[in-house]
Each structure stands twice: as structure tokens, then as C-alpha cells.
Amino acid sequence: MTDFARLLHADGPSPQHAAALQLYGRFVGDWDAEITAHGPDGTKHTAPGEIHFGWVLEGRAVQDVWIIPRPAGIPALPISGNWYGTTLRVYDPTIDAWRISWFDPGRCIFRQQIGRPRDADIVQEGTTEAGDLTRWSFTEVTEDFFHWLGEVKPATATDWRLVVDVRAKRRKG
Image 1 (tube, rainbow, N blue to C red):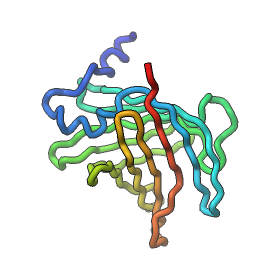
Image 2: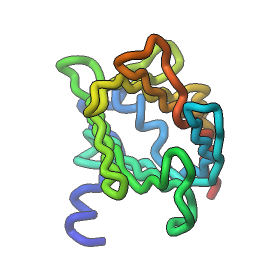
Image 3: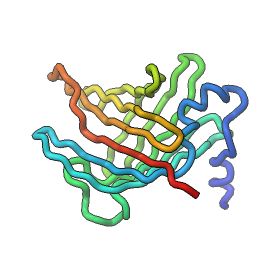
Image 4: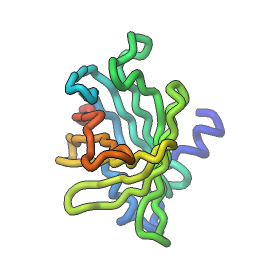
């Protein structure tokens, strides 16, 4: 492991906010996913993907990598394109919430959101560069499964529109 990788990676959560860090820390590990992209006209396209979560920055943050579709290099998934991006999730005790940054350099998509628990779910909210609202939610979370919903609400719309639907299962072994 290089010094960079060794210094970025952490073995577990920082003891300072260990309980709060488990909101996303429970996802640490490797996941296989089924991704369905939803077009505004009702079309749907499904492809396999993979997601990897890990502790970083002395256990003060959770970082992930989303690779969709898997294997990399196959034609782009219609509607949403291919993803090869990372999210950095940092707990901020001053607002008792998570500051979230998503980076997908291949598609030039960058998002900032605030994440909080909402009942049994996790909801992340933000805006696009165009001013559309975004809502990304983790639902149906168990030790070995989660359902992730990516929604958008254009500034001129009254309703949320489902854009991407991800069902992830933890890899065994």
C-alpha cells in the first residue's frame, strides 16, 4: 500500500463521534448492485454495478466508489450513462448532519448534499448547478441490503422524479 492509500484509509470510526459515524459506517464493505435508470418518458434500463465503502481520514469520514455498469468499459447505460465516481461523507457535529460530496469525473458531475437520518432511512438533499433539487435516499437498510433512490425536482416542477433506483446486496466472504 502506498503512503497515500495508507494515510487515506482507516481501520474504523474515530472514537470522537463513533455512534454518529455509524449512520454511513454500517455500509463499509463491498456490494453488488442492480441499477435501474428511469427516463422522463417512463423508459427503464437496468445494469449490474458494484459499490465499495470504506473508512477514511482517521475514521472521521466514509468514502465510497460506485461503478456502474460493471464491468467497466461496456457501452453506456442509457439515460444515466456510466458511473465511476466517489462520494466523501463527513459528519459535521456543528449541524448534526453529514456533508456529502459526489464526484464523477467521467461524466463531469459534482454534487454537494446534506445527509440526515429520517426515521429508518437516510436522506441526502442538495441542488444541481441548474438549481434543480436533488434527493438521494437509502431505504430498506439491513446488514446485507439497501435500496438507494436518486430523485430530482426541477425548479419548474411540483413533484419529485425518480432518476435512478439501486438495489445493493453485500458481498459474502
